Image (spheres, rainbow, N blue to C red):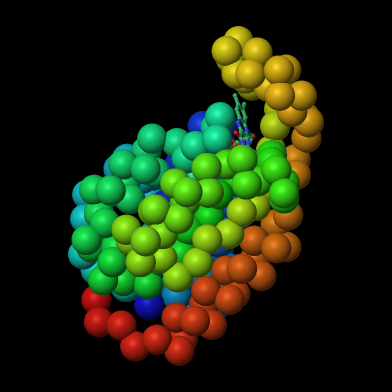
Length: 167
Ligand SMILES: Cc1cc2nc3c(=O)[nH]c(=O)nc-3n(C[C@H](O)[C@H](O)[C@H](O)COP(=O)(O)O)c2cc1C
């Protein structure tokens, strides 16, 4: 299977989750390309897509939203999985615009959406970001669970193995 893994990321934490998904899929025998969502020109040749985004002030980053709307029709023809990465944890994760997530899932016919923890490093934030995080009392640190990411990628691989999909 040729799989596109594309993740919108401002400070690299979500991109690394995408890379981990890609590495796990490659380890399980898939051919994978990791491309920034803003750089994707076509889905031709890809059998499946994993699309992710960091969550900022409750929303996916514009590049991920634009990717989903630009390629909605093409995505709907392929198996698609979505993931979000943020600091909000359940039940607070419900604050991350669940209606928006559901709308994207419906528009692209996604098979699933997974929310992963994120990473916060005050040192790399700009002033506006620091102000938002201070107001939200965001916890500095790496809250990503890469074992859970790998497990999820394994589930995707299993589903792909059970699906016959023309490119
Ligand atoms: C200004 C700012 C706003 C954020 N807003 C949210 C939010 O609304 N919900 C959430 O779950 N995480 C939020 N986060 C946490 C980020 O989603 C988290 O740090 C993520 O891992 C960043 O991914 P990136 O390194 O790929 O940009 C916010 C972080 C910053 C700096």
